[in-house]
Image (cartoon, rainbow, N blue to C red; front, side, top):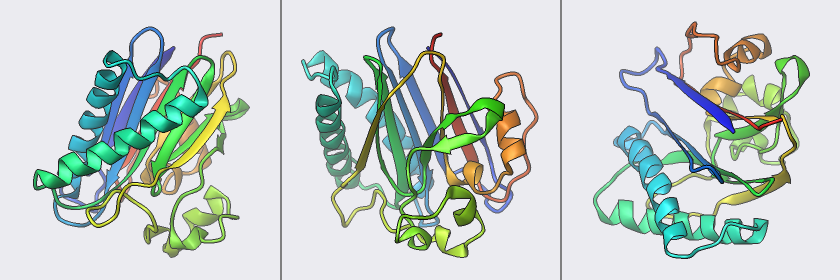
Length: 226
């Protein structure tokens, strides 16, 4: 398994409120992407949440938790989010964030998410087949494509996210991962603000040019072995 990540600060903000984290221990890959909202403290929350989830996943495995099946991973991820919520907000963090946690292990992918960070599989030609539907008011029927949502201002109104007054309730998506498949995890600054052509270029590890974006744009690319 090979992976790389990038983040680009948007021009509309003074700070980058996206956060990325990745771990590969030779058996599994654990990947986290978070996007802080406009609320004060959300950038710090996104960064701390990302680090907390990566570290806590490792700690849970060391304590004997299993991720050998889709069911056990889903259970582990739900517990992970509950503990992160209790820990961070009891320690004075403010703000809110969209998040997505992806685990690639034993030939399958498990994704837990709330908000508008998304996971997809890169198809031939560099187009992305998105596996997760954003939680936003523009997609309340959950029947619109990412390209349709990209042009709707209602996508900025997030309907589910990591926040103080609500316990995490991540949506879980699982699928088999085939040999040679390429996975992408991205914030909305990537999937909504960039054209399909620019996305395809940025999904290549040797493409170093940074796109000009209003919103922060971040992405992780995971290449499965052939």
